Length: 158
Image (tube, rainbow, N blue to C red; front, side, top):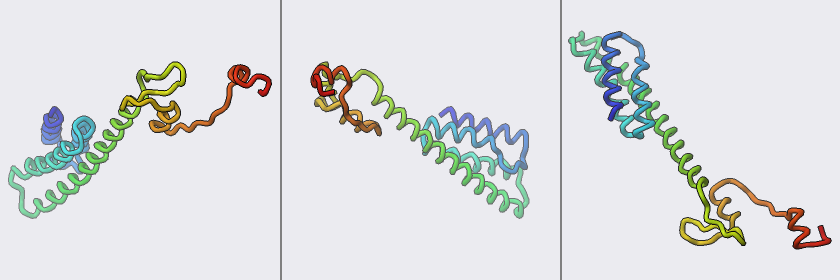
């Protein structure tokens, strides 16, 4: 919820510094942070709320009616751009979290048989090392015989 306070602070800074700014870039920062750390819906909510509150702040001193239409249109355009950025950064955050989850699956200690080199999976079943790694990565295996195993198991052939 800290990003709501940041959004309010950005509104206050915008109000104090410039009432006629073309596109207040400072609104993007709290929306991006909300998307990254809190997800899509908090970011979209903030992306809608910030331009609407800005419009309310600009209209409070009672503007002439012909000026209100352009303010509403500008607010809607700002909102669309900020919502787009919110959705984009939320997707990036989800993608990074998924990548971290996949990397975590490949990290750590693996229970492996000392003799046959099979690995115990999450279900507690033993499976071939190649199958275990292939399901979790894009690695492909080709088999051969190293020189020491060739001498031990196939003496005189290799």
